[in-house]
Image 1 (cartoon, rainbow, N blue to C red):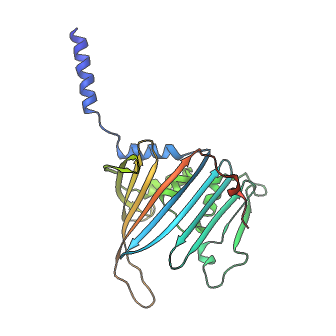
Image 2: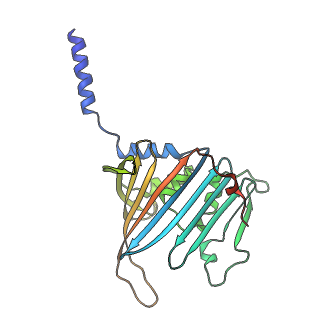
Image 3: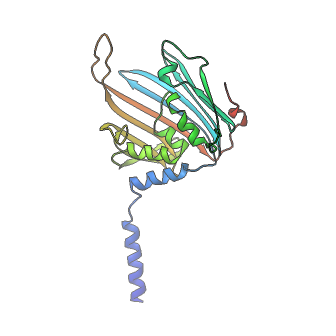
Length: 252
């Protein structure tokens, strides 16, 4: 009887003192949610603000394993721009890298095309196709890395988040989220340059991501004072959802 009572007390104490998941465990669960998905559809809305001036960029993404991919980014600003990656599983196309595409002398044709299975090589999956096209995107941050979910993409996120801290809870729409935050750097070879926050649902979905940093921009005519820049991504990604097959038509 006493043994049973003590066991009950011990179980009660264990339940009372049980700690919520750590920030690292929540991020690990988020990685698991997206890694190796057979398909995905979704959108990411980014808004970047400095001195009450905002620029937005919308990303639409869809993929289906092994090698079908659609990723379109549209920048809404005084200089609207669009970036597009398409793969039908046989060939894929993407814009010229930005340093050439937006140069004074633009290349012709404006898009590049490659075989999904290069001569003498192995068939590339959607993650490898994405990696080959990253210099032809308008922006690339944690939400895009997470959506693709490849080993390299997830490692890039791990290299960027220097510290991890649970900062509280909130609600986005009808979903409860835990806020994880800390120091951010561009990669493992750079110093800390920003603060980040991840808003992760109970099921491991990233619902929002933000970065706050101080940026100094030098123009030919003058040097601007350092500006506080806040960038927020609202994320809506559906893992293993069925994509619209017409999205994978190769755009040349």
